[in-house]
Image (cartoon, rainbow, N blue to C red; front, side, top):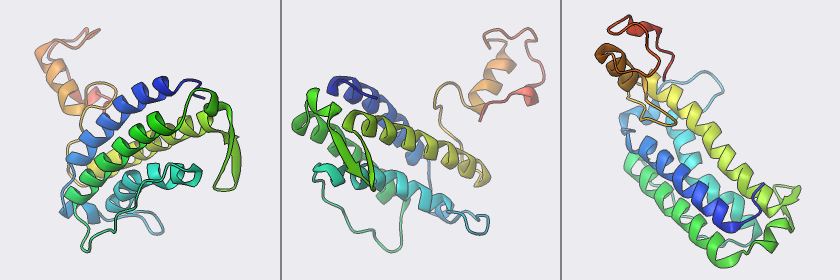
Length: 180
């Protein structure tokens, strides 16, 4: 739970940049990545990531305008929409809420929680869907940008160069990498 607006702003500013980088690596073709029956496509998850911040926080007075989704959906729209919504969340929380209000209970989606907990849930929700998106990106043949450390390609390059921290086998088998 966040107790200070600045703590959320600082954390979400970082996380939203990581998410924006991931969305920037999408292509229009990748949005329709085949999916398992009854599950969301890469494009559906990416659009959800772009729109969820305002859909969640607008229920408690954030007041960010929804934009109509173009047909056909494009990777550029998703990345641009995410940048717009994440910036609006940061600006709205800074302008409309104060530290004391983060302890006020809010009913969002029929659930009662303090606003500070909602901000934490919003951030964790985004991180959860970023993980789903990274799997679908790999299935679509796209690179996954570095998220919380080097991605697979960066790890493989460090192993090959013998510069991987803790690597005892310089130039060793890079297939042992567990990175995404």
